[in-house]
Amino acid sequence: MRTPIIAGNWKMNKTIREAIQLVLAMKDELDAIQGIEKVLCPPFTALSAVKLLVAGSSIKVGAQDIFWEEKGAYTGEISPVMLKELCDYVIIGHSERRKYFGETDEGVNRKVKAALAHGLIPIICVGENLEENEAGLTEEVVTRQVKGALEGVPAHEVEKLVIAYEPVWAIGTGKPATPEGAQAVIGGTIRKLLAEMYGEGVARKVRIQYGGSVNPANIGGFIAQPDIDGALVGGASLRAKDFVEIIRMAAQVKSEA
Ligand code: PGA
Image (cartoon, rainbow, N blue to C red; front, side, top):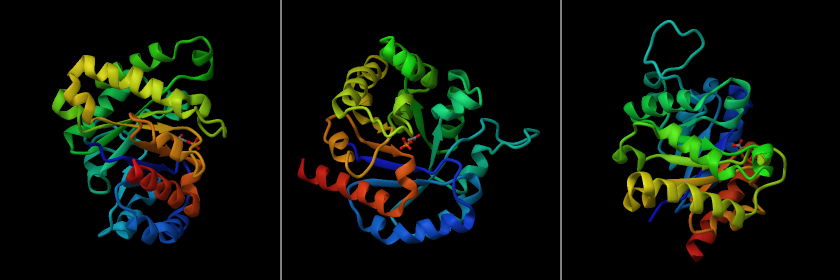
């Protein structure tokens, strides 16, 4: 069975001081919840402080991006070697990076390979935008993004990673997908594609999250779907009470299933 994973993507929010306050406000409660893997993804500047605060707890840390080279003249970039000291997970290919920073499927693929080569677990984000959704292109877009991200990645690495299906129109809008709609893409498109590419055994192991306006009131519906293995949470992960409640609800629904 796949252990569900819920990650908080803080995006470009929280100074170091604020990050410490947020972690202290939820650490003990999060740590006590079992059956769900819990990951905090602060900005690079707060990774070190957050890592120290959660040391010895069941809470893991992730970065929000990575560069594919190990070191060198790449001003402003952060390498997998540097991140390996600070975290276990790394979000790759978030739609905001694709939209504002020109990230391509090819770049995502290089980052995925670099992360895996250094023992970091990628959380690969895919998802269609509103226009694509309305034009009925969801399956086509998501298939292209998944295939692009995984190009040349061997099956034994694929089974470790996490994919986040995040329809762009649901991110930060307060208008989430329906649990059935998310299940249709996650089970019907993504896991099916993984089975075609790598076989059923691998496809069954990959954890696939839903992301986009997840909150304490709607997490239960998503996590109850057979192929949805957790969530990537943006806005609500900045509020200690909401993030704890999301994970508590998810653990409860899973334990009753
Ligand atoms: P949201 O963001 O929960 O604020 O919609 C999700 C994400 O971008 O990962």
